[in-house]
Image (cartoon, one colour):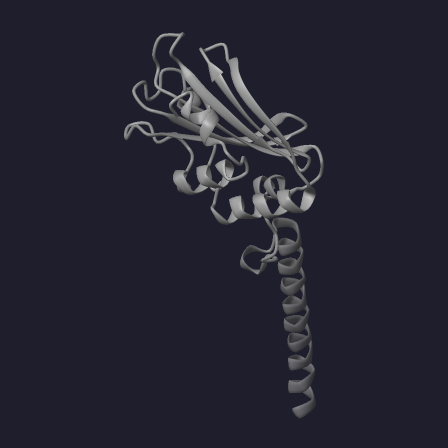
Length: 200
């Protein structure tokens, strides 16, 4: 009788072990295919952050500030662009971006690295870009200012986020505007002369 019982139990035990191994294997394959859920590598970063922190010579970041919507002669805006090799501040008149003045400066990779990491810590690219009509800035915040922040690769915008000083048009930018704007402005020494001339 003892032999009979053990001969019945042994196949059941082996079957349970095989099932457990199969389940473990399926779970491992599933994690490998679908990213591993909560066990994903904490050092992984999203594409937007990778673009921001990329210090290759084709990358850059840009801030554009647009003033109130007024007559073409009175409309003003400015743009600061920073790359690993250059920094620039350009002021514009009118809706066709006629250059009023500009300041061009050199840069180096170490300075650019410190700058973009500071932008990352200030959460510059944390927002989600809007699409369609929600991303249309024409006529938005007619009495105030619009701020747009972009990451660039080879001159093309990879991600752009914007906000405005008008409470009804908050846009997609979620970080603190004065903090991020200050970081850009500090890249251009004596920027006040150019900006005071356009009142922005």
